[in-house]
Amino acid sequence: MYDVPDELVVEADGAIRIVTFNRPEDRNPASTAMLFGLTRLARSLAEDQAVRAVILTGAGKAFSAGGDFQHLVRTSQDPDVARETLDNGRAFIKSMLDLPVPVIAAVNGAAVGFGATIAALSDIVLMAGSAFFAEPHVNVGLVLGDGISITWPFLMAMNKAKELIFTGDRIHAADAVACGLANRAVPLDQLMPEALDLARRIAQQPRSALEGSKAILNMYPKAMMDSILEATIARQFAQTQGPDHGRIVQDLIDRQKRSQQ
Image (cartoon, rainbow, N blue to C red; front, side):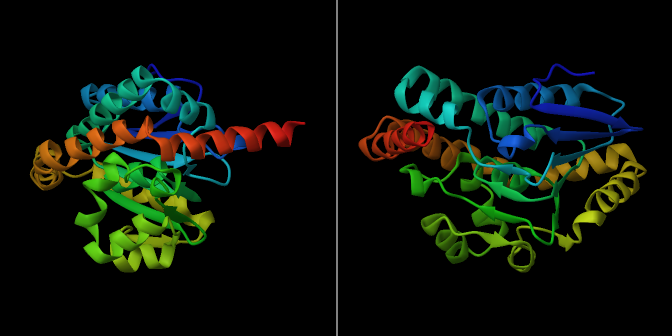
């Protein structure tokens, strides 16, 4: 149906496309293949006139629980890989904001780093009661994630966003709803049925009015792309090659080697 890597599964339910992050054994990390595949997919979905709504979810117990270890190592050791990754990040954020149809994030479990970012870029966020968000970039020696920088301070109070970003603390479903990061929390076994029901209701709306409304509303985060997003990407690139991030990544490499002995 679409050109996607094995880490992504796309299913059709009438005019709805269900996109599943599909590395459940590793908690659906944001690998290089997944990151670049999602950008291609978002563009393809935008061009597919049969699509009226999109649902994002994760296979297994996690939505997407952070960055892939090998991808993290490559970006810290190779400036070209880091630059390509950040350029793709910019393209992905733009493609998500330009996607004309509504995107519903059905957050079934941990949504960490990239997982929190893609949920924040979605139009509607439903969370399982046991799910949580976390933004740990500062913990690994990097500035906040590029998508987080233009969404979290817009969705919730700035001081709350700062607390979560500075500490990397988790914010669980009930608190995420209370502060504006999610629309509502539902029991896990009702998450996908509720997401599908909502997507079907939205898909029945007049297409031009729906797409026009989304385009107008997304002018708010898009207005911040040229300044805030570019500043975030510039600082991220500098810090992927910086001593703090390099030391933390090396500690992770050493820890993994010891665990394999």
